[in-house]
Image 1 (cartoon, rainbow, N blue to C red):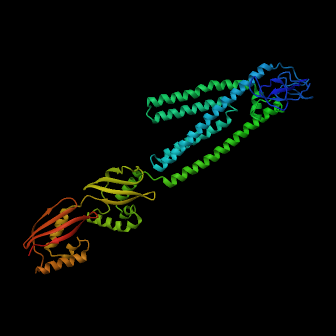
Image 2 (image 1 turned 90 degrees about the horizontal axis):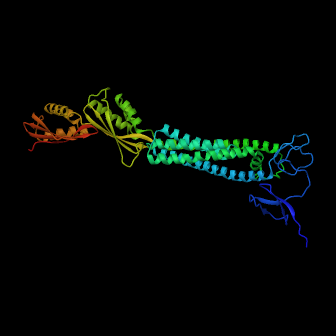
Image 3 (image 1 turned 180 degrees about the vertical axis):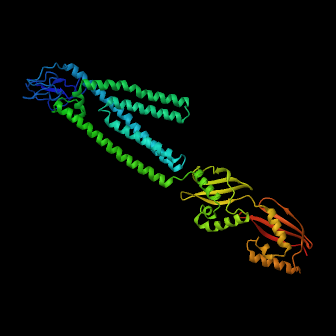
Length: 473
């Protein structure tokens, strides 16, 4: 029984074989590539790579060498050298794929950093200029690394050096932010050193590509170092340049679209969650306070309270004889809720004015700071004592009643008190003393009819008479 064999060749290294079944695939013993049956022909072969040639071809379709009669004979590589180059190129492509993984890992890390920056916007931890700087820096790094992941097969040495440089820059910045912690610094240097160690290997890959451009170009275009690609050397070169330009354009389009989406997310997050730093709010409030305009100061309260607070501020300014020259707010001390950020929530500010220390309570409402309440140091009670005694001795019920919350009602009450005791006028005050401190005071009037006690309390930063206790009858 006669056995038949058929010519075959490895699709990667070009090693020729004889196989029993032309319909079956086999594995190459040299490079483990796929061995397929080929048509047996006695056609002329390329003197450089021994690729079968068709009649009239001036260039080898695999390596691009001139083979026409009018071409000078150029000594080509041996089949063994070509097989070795093919195997080395297969390993080189595996190394470039590893580099691409590093690039894509860098893109992922940069995207995480961008997401963290958006979280910082929501927390209002850092100033807005720093948020923009950090976000744009990571966006740029993500774009560069994404382009590198796509272009590393075309310019391996350039992109490997760029990747190592970016890693070194990132580790340097991290070390600076961590006050050059020894452990963090050494770890960062080791990590960056690993990437620089890849550069010499990438240089060898580039040299291998330069020595075997036909195999590299074929792999770039067809996905393998197939010699039977049907493309001439010049066609492969042209297609490689075209593929590189297309890869650039597609990478830039993807990065541009990603950058637009990222910036929209940043601006949306800022508009929704960013609140101005409270220090700036307090600075603006100080300016309005010291202008002596009750309307400007009242504008810091919620809208529903502004009219009432403006009247209260006018009364305070009149009661304390401020006029248009309100006392300056100095040595402000800001206290923030323990569970709240510096930039939102509730704020307590204590500041000094010439007569003592005042307190201003703030809260963040609908992304804006609003003044909730304020407490000033108690006004001078000696003036209240003097005015009350003078009004009492004059039996001026109207002057006395204005110290009560409801003057009209209080004036009638004082008149009825005198009438029940058959006082034609209020008994004269011989001396007066003040008891108490803080927001509650008692004015004791020693009159010729007995002891009269008038209670005062501080309401909205004004002394208000709460009650009058006449002498026992």
